Image (tube, rainbow, N blue to C red; front, top):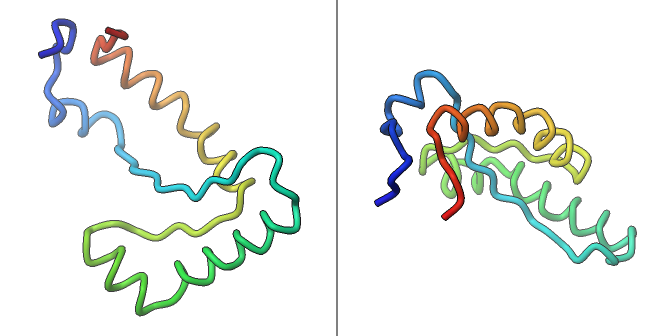
Length: 94
């Protein structure tokens, strides 16, 4: 049990939104052509209505299919919220 965790998750969720990200990553030195082809293939699968409905939406998630720039921008956008959540919950490294 964490000593410094003073809030329950339910106390925090009404203040800070919760996002769960599933990201397809490739090594940093992967050629751009392979990154582009991989991204296109993953996005195509995620945008298939049958896949999105049976594998994502059925589990209560929302599909947001984007490229690597979209992921980078999303992380940058959410970082302040994540930092504030960690601070408000008094979460510290163990």
